Length: 102
Length: 120
Image (cartoon, rainbow over all chains, first blue to last red; front, side, top):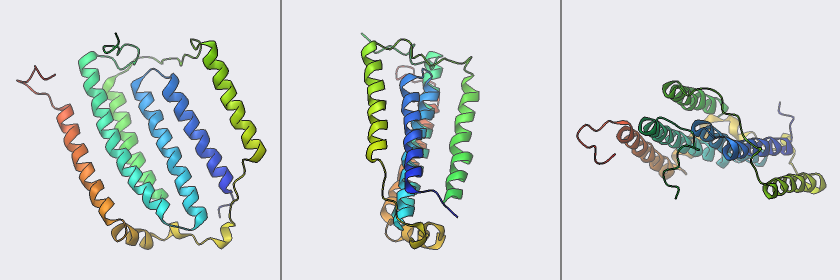
């Protein structure tokens, strides 16, 4: 049986979101940035499920289904863009992708 | 619900990530660089984290309802599917269309156009 309180889930969600945000801010590899983006999405999903469970409603779970589907589409398109970028420039480090600068 | 999440995530998204990492053949580990930050940014970051912690310890506790009194609706898959196909029927259809569009986009993005070099 679940014994954790709502606080625990929310703290875990905030921690995951913070880790993802930090990763997006300081990593230099596009793939890892993308993974951290997914981590932030999953953290928000966790908060949604926790609230849904503790309120006894079903809507949060349904929204998680929708978020999951949108995340799948987003991952597919994003990874395709990264692969196209890698083919074009032979690098995915964000430091070297500065064509639009200046 | 957790099982569906696990299935879709481990089966589709993580596998896609692993496949792309294998495909791109990136070399080495890039060390996250926090040394190049300006002093102002560091002060602001430490201040924000401290503020968050202080506000959490001060009054950060959500009133969490007793789980024994809350019905475990998420466990019943029948109700879940019923809601998905009655209340949320239109979003489900739109999501299906979104997946189709995403699939088309990926195909267009990853296809090599032979005679269309001026586009790329």
